[in-house]
Amino acid sequence: MPDVHVVALCGSLRDRSYTRLALEHALRGVEAAGGTGELVDLREYDLPMLDADHDEQGDSAALKQVVREADAVLLGTPMYHGSYSGVLKNALDYCGFDEFDGKTVGLLAVAGGSFPVTALEHLRSVCRSLNAWVIPHQAAIPRAHSAFDDDGAFRDEGVEERVLTLGRRAVGFANIEQDPATFESAQNKGAKN
Image (cartoon, rainbow, N blue to C red; front, side, top):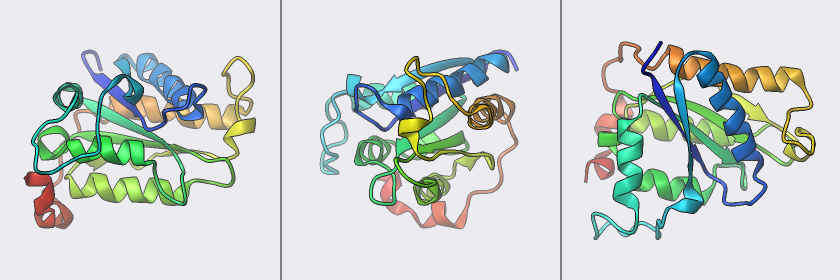
């Protein structure tokens, strides 16, 4: 599918971020499927903690525009305390239906220990409440400290293929016909304000 542009939001601020490395691999899958990809490094955005009394703060308008203009979005996060990162949460809080309604979203999470399933489940719920279409395929990378070699390549071909597939699916499903709005999105008044 030509002309499909996918942005990948990295919910980690670490210099050597396994989340960022994994998203870079996912973007290779996007390119292999004929799309274009862009890594959105949240370290490059001034995003103070959201204050709902102010419509825009810092670089929030620029972040929202990048997400809004994308055909699909990949959300990547490390698992912290059984959920996704506060960095990603804050970025998502600045966004809403204008950015995610009907948008195809792919999910990727890394963990220092076992599978980061709860982080993926929590992100899936947030995306559903924004009426996004979440790709059924998701990428979980356990024991991230041993998943990559020193050059940033995956050590396990199966994990690498799962991450590349996420990127390919983002392109393949970018223009999927959307379902009617979810119950959650109709009840999510805060995202509309």
